Image (cartoon, rainbow, N blue to C red; front, side, top):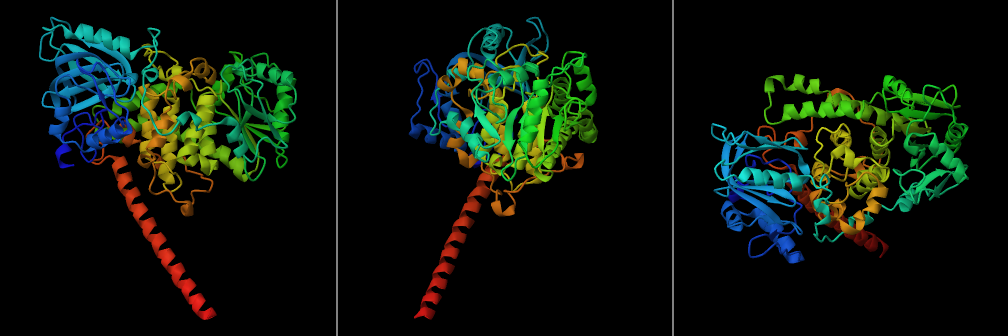
Length: 636
């Protein structure tokens, strides 16, 4: 490992065991998961190798290469490429204006998947998937004076902004800028994201990880005497943003009745089952706001349907409606035709507002947080600056809301209905986090993948609109870090219960990196219907295929059933227990990241844990053998 001390990871992360290059990070999530390498040159014309031997050989070579050998592999015009990736353009004599170590001269490569920069001396290299590009701007003109005053600036969807100075004499900027705009924003030009070109082969098929009927059966055998599985939406006609398979109360035995209930809910997102308590009948259902409006309209069918949800739990005489919004926002929604359930009209319900703000507030909060984390960090004002972003305050509201749901379901044995405005942002945050706290299965690696597929993907969180995959409308008001905020909330819970989760921090960072990268089809489009229409499962690869083929990278060495992994979790939402996720937001800043990547630490601990478990097994077998021998001797 000594020779790799100056090498930045291929995807912009630090090489294992080092402090990283000028743009390295503490995570290997966009580099260590690359199991194959194909190169593009004038001779190879983009041919790739995907044999299992080359997968492992490249992965090993990349993790342990020296600066010299890394330079040899990048000789000429070769660029490390994924299967299906091709070089599109190269600019020589480009200067990367690193905010930490100053200008670095090198070559800048553009493929159909990434930007790749390699310094002249081959010591510094990094790449940025084009899916992370939020916007691109030209800096200076041909007549600009001053060194490095002419070039382009790239603003990323994570935290970074990258500046590259071009030589105005060779006129390379214009063509590179135009190609970058074309390749970074394929949706804008009616093209497909890189996921449709990516052809890597993995040992696991991630698309099979979630099967809705099987998951409902896991929830204490749904269908049962209270809940049934229906396919009323198999053609997505009732609700085009819902999945095709639902679980609803057995008493709702008429499809026309269900259609009537859906018509009274925003976007036709009627209440359906998310989770059922394994030792009782308390349920978590999710939906969108009722279309009450200023005229205080009513729907007898909707009122009857909520009573059916309550009646499905024989141990409770009240249904708690958890409205994610602040009270004032819910009242304001009445003017737009929405609103909330009135306790005077809906019998046997209690309405609780959870004060989680809307997507616009969250977007502004993240913008402020990014400014504090990159590129400069003011130690003297760090705490006050973080407080001013209100990011931790928003996380507190989400965690607090989830804890209230858990308390009602677990301790009070009462059913809970969750909604916000349209039921695909704050609703998913609350149901997803509360289910994670209630159900140990979702705290396993596979279970968490199922949870993301179920509560976020199948129930229509608008990933395309919230992330802006391949879209150049960087100021689109629909953009918002809703899913990032939820993953951050999960991270906060893992800090309070380090033994309760099978997966580690690196797993969460990997999910976020590929949320943006467009390398996998998992997070593309807005709804299950859109993914079916665009044949995502047939034409792209699931993120879970890569993750489950390299499970060892994502396992938490502290995970332990005996330490309470199987119990219900009730984290404290108090601000004093919440922390800025430096491993994610500050990983590109060399002043903030750890010297050794977290995933390397996890691997070492996992290896040590395996050795101890093996030794424990051997000792236990030895003791049992001795005991058996003693018993046999006494019997004789």
